[in-house]
Each structure stands twice: as structure tokens, then as C-alpha cells.
Length: 224
Image (cartoon, rainbow, N blue to C red; front, side):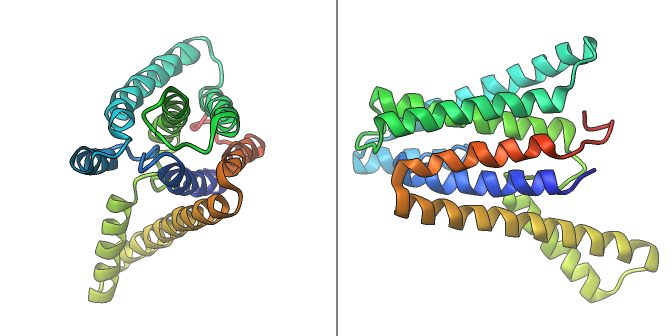
């Protein structure tokens, strides 16, 4: 498959996690399990954000289920699945950027404007997670870096220890691809933090542009 597409999505995921975390008082939009930690912190400190973190997981799960069901319908109608999911993600990101621009900056992340913005962005990233699992599974994950980093270290240790020739090449190739994925995600995080510091909520207009660029990237027949 075209590896440029999942790498762009990795940059997008890192950007969204960093920018949303800063703008929405600790809300993770990309890997929602982090919200359990920040939820506990919000409850203990009494700061705003508890409601958004409670809602993030069910919203994420419902959107992933919906994305999968839509994929099934599109397949039966011989319609492009991956491109349709990416188009839906793009639309949600544009809506999220509009909400952030109109209502932000946010002082209370449990107020309706911040909740609407946060859940829209969570939904957008849920679609990216689903699209990657369904259509780009041969590429390293674009959102969850813990497992990817673990595999990098395992492959690195195996290469250092020495592998049989038939195992060494696949390990080195996987090590390279996964390292690039982590680097892309980290680059996105740095960009998200930097652009939020410079431009505030206006930074949320970059993710739709990133997703838009993927529409020009060719997909293999298996990814469609």
C-alpha cells in the first residue's frame, strides 16, 4: 500500500492529541484510554473536564461501530469504503475547527460549546482509528504508539542479538516502518503544541488540510 497515507494520518493523530489536550483541558481525542487518567485527576482536583472525559469513550465506541456498519453497507453497494470514511473524518474535522474558532478559547471544558467541539473531534478520530484497522491494517498504527514502540524495541533487540536471514529482513523492514510512524506521530504532537501556542484554537484548521491531502493518494484495491 501507499505508506504516505498512514504517515500523514500519524501526523494528524499526534497533532490532534496535543492540540485538543491543550485547548480542552486534558481531553484526549485520539486514544481515549488516556481520558481515564485525566478523569481521575479532574475529579480529585475539582477542575473542569470530567464530563467530557466521561463522554469520550461512549462517543468513540458508537462512532467506530457506526463506521464499521457503514463500511458493510458500502461494500454491498460496491462503493469506496476507505475514501468515504476519510471524507466523513474530513467533514467532522471541519465542523470541529468551526466550533473551536467560533466558541474558543475554552475556559470550561464541561460547558456545551467545549463539549460539542470535543466530541466532534473525538468522533473524527474514532473514524480514523476505524479506517486504519479496517483498510490500512498492514501499515503501523497511526494513533496508538505504545504497542508500536514496544514492537520497535523487540525488533531492535532481535536484530542486535542476531536473526536467521529469513527473519532478519522482515524485522528490519518492520523496524523501519514503525520507527517512521512513531516519528510522524511525535512530529504531529510537536506541531500541535507549537501551533496552539502561536495561534490558539485556529490551529484546528490544519488537521482537515492534512486529511484532505490523503484524498489525492492512490489506494490499492485491497485498501479501497
